[in-house]
Image (tube, rainbow, N blue to C red; front, top):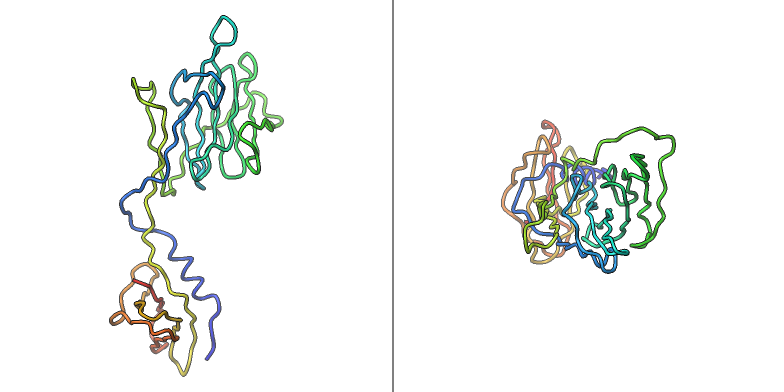
Length: 256
C-alpha cells in the first residue's frame, strides 16, 4: 500500500480557515493604573487617537494622557502602552507635545508617530522582543521628515475584538480594556494516514479505547458529511476504504 505523506497535513491546514461563529468569550481585562505608568500620576483623559487597537497576532496598543505635579504647575504627558496576547503590560513610553498615533504593531515591533518639537513629527520604533516595561530603546525611521502615515486599522480577519471605556471617561468608571474572542469551532481531527490498495482509497488512524471516531467525506473541503455511524476505538489502528475511481473526494476522521 502506498502512503501519501503530507495529505492529512494538507487537509488539516485547509480546514483551519473559515469557521462558524459562536458565543464570544472574554480573554482578559486590563485596567490602566496611572501610578504604575508614572509614580504619583493621575489619569488626565481617556484613550486617544483611535486606540486601543489590536494587531492580528493579538498584541494591544493604547494611547492616553496622565497628569502629575512637577513643580507648581501640573504637567501632562502622553503614554503609549503595549499589552501582549495575555493582556500583560510589556512596554510603555512617555511622549510630550501631542497624542502619539499607532502606525504598526505586532509581537516583534511597534511603530508610532510622536511630536518631538513644535509641530515636528517623528516615527518612533520599538523592538518588543525581550524588552522591559520601562526600557527606552526607541529608534526612528530615517528620511521621513514631513511625511505622514495612516493609523493602524484592526485586521478584518481577526476573531478577536476589544471593548473599552469611552472618552471622556464616565464618572466613577476605571479606564479599562477587555479582549473578547470568538472561539473556533474546527472539529478535532484524528491523526490519519492515506494510501491506495487495489484501487481503493484508504484512510487509517490509531484509536484510543472508548473514544468515538467519525469518518467524513467531502468533495470541496467545505461541506462534510458523515459516512455511517461513529466508530468506537479499541486501542488498535482502524481503517476505512472506498473505490478510488469516483470523482474527486476527500476523507477525514474527526473526534466528535
